[in-house]
Image (tube, rainbow, N blue to C red; front, side):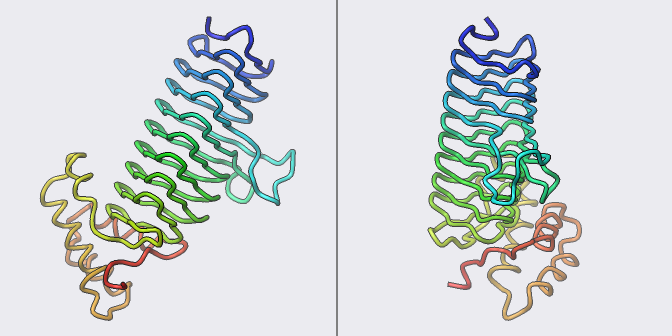
Length: 265
């Protein structure tokens, strides 16, 4: 039966006929759930929340709760949008957005959020992201496609985590991690490029070599140059590399500054 008789579903909720709502799940007002999505027992979905197709939300997850923001007031516009094919494991919490930033928290598609992950208000997640157990995001964090956060990683508000990045277990992240970088340590630093991840995702040897050169220019061979000078050098010397241009762009667009590297130890 798509909706178990013991589930509590608000009359305004829109549940696709091919979705599954399991025993004792609670689906609140202004919730939309797409085809093939499975809501396990005792999960709570509050709205306004829109969930796409073929997601699996496991038991005791709390999805679409009020923002944990002292300025939020009931009645303000506040939304959560989740894409397709996501795995959201037990005890995950995902809060809706606030009027401070488009009133929207957004989760893309094909992500895996392991148990006890927390995603705060106004966060924006792309696609193919893995957040390991107990990783937590403060408000307004942005995570780009194919990023991986290790268990217990913590991300400060307004930080950006770039494409194809890897942050190790227990990182306390308070600065941006640029595209393709690896960060580790409780007080983390950029250690290297994510060459293993890039190889797994089909990047060419020349693309990986370009990112290695960019890493050296920004993090190892700066020789007292200002960051802007290093980026300008890359814009000239690596202008034919789309990967390096994305790397430069994400640094230039940083709201909080970028994480320091091994040369700063």
